[in-house]
Length: 302
Image (cartoon, rainbow, N blue to C red; front, side, top):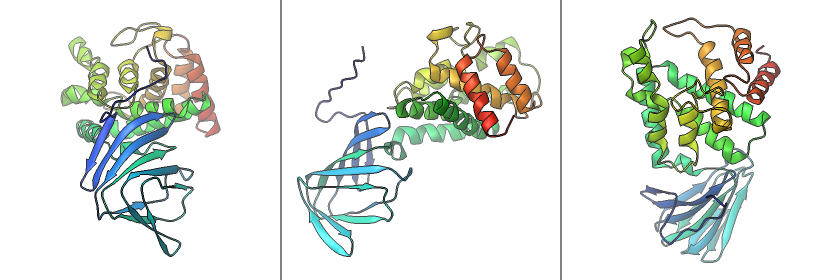
């Protein structure tokens, strides 16, 4: 049972990223913030750059070693027990390690995924899927953007929105196992072919289970479930389905309907919305559909 309290032992971390200059251990994360242990080898030049988003705050506490910092036309030597941080940084700051250095590194917005080997592997796999079906890459990006806008209307937390963003980008990852001729078949699928298609949420879920983004695997596993139990692969109903999966279901369906595919033409945004509205409470969550309709109206799409 998750009580919201976590204990970590020495040399344990959620994920480690190793570079030529040192290493970065992700120790904890929550609500968009991250706590890391950073080790940097001696005689390395490191930069702190203006972040994205601009309000990013990065805090560093020196556990061991000596750092030389260049700032405001002067050089400052920082040692064990000293700290430095940036907030709304306007210019790049350079520092050099005089010895091997260990620091506690805290950020108010997630940055570890830029260095994560796991995420890089998933992105590489997603690229392979897009080679099988060129539609998928742009589709995933649109689904992510729609999903995050819906999440904003529903006031999801930073952490849940973060998980939703990654689940949206990787929700079709399991299609790597589907033969190209089935993915791009212009006609109606046979029962056997559709059974293969129905495996992709479970396959995608397995591929992302090793990531440190909690819940992303379950979201991917459930994104084709429907409120009345008619979805796949588990036939979940109602509250058995995660809200994040319900959001992706709406965003995914809308985008699929409004884009030309080999097996059918597109429909207009209004026709797609009418279809979503007609299935509110049957296939799709009412709050999610209503939030998405509000987004589309505000953007003058419908």
